[in-house]
Length: 421
Image 1 (cartoon, rainbow, N blue to C red):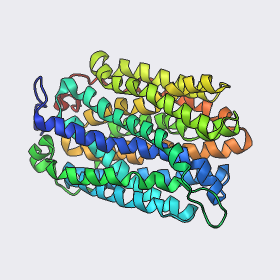
Image 2 (image 1 turned 180 degrees about the vertical axis):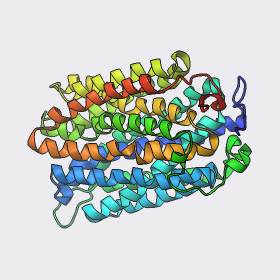
Image 3 (image 1 turned 90 degrees about the vertical axis):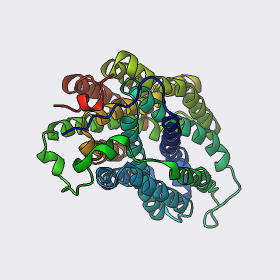
């Protein structure tokens, strides 16, 4: 039995505004952490003696943490949204600090693997919170704006990383600059502030009202014995295909631009900063767009622009043509998230929402997230970054076709309606 809880009327309450800020800050670090690895990868490779294939294995190993995050996200349906947010913030802060202390590729991978477990657990739970606590007619806007703060995190990262990489910290074994460590130390202070701010966080109204449907211990595969098994598989397929493009669009671009287009570190840093800045208002506009034109029509704009941006940012020559294309590549990598977050949160009932998000995104959907960088990096050793990554743009067209073929329109409807089969 569904408990219907209206998300509100016209104006957001004072608590909803505070929750919006809190969830936005939590999302900020998803973007910061994602771009941090992209920015430091060439420097990390040089410092630790890693080749392209090693880099692909490293990225894939770290990305496995996003799969293991499944175990945390599904607990949101048992422990509650608030408790999971508390655990994930503390865990991500601790392992981000340990990342800066890592001494070789293995310790770096372990620390970042664990950090990703907690980071993605925090991010996914934030999306569930956003879906459950805000009005139906503003749900797309809120999810989109919160996701947009991930882009802001990427912009801040793009701006500070080139400066941090120049810090006069050297590896005594080989003399390489290791300012990349400061990239992770710099994120500790705001994370501690976020941990302090969560004291005023309340449990989701819908989860608190769910009664007997919540707080139950369920077997790992319990959702596949419910009528929502088909929807779970459908969303997992769409997430997995989408990640093939979005996960690689930015991850290897610095390596591509420096090694295959001859751009300097400074030029690449400037290009990423400009592209991130220009794309940010576009990403923030996705949420209102989803409420205005609907989820499916919004997906057309997002997936087509993102696919084109990925293709041309690994095709063009010259700093400015590449920067122009990268604007849409970064936009696409970020903007697909509010589209799929909205669908995933809206298509399942409260007592299964965390578990469904965990299965479709964190476990099954992340196969594309984890496996595609490994495959791309291996093929790039034989061909090139450009030749391989631009092919991933096809995945956006496939994902868009799946959205139209498999999913209903959910815009402007209460969660109890959108989750009904």
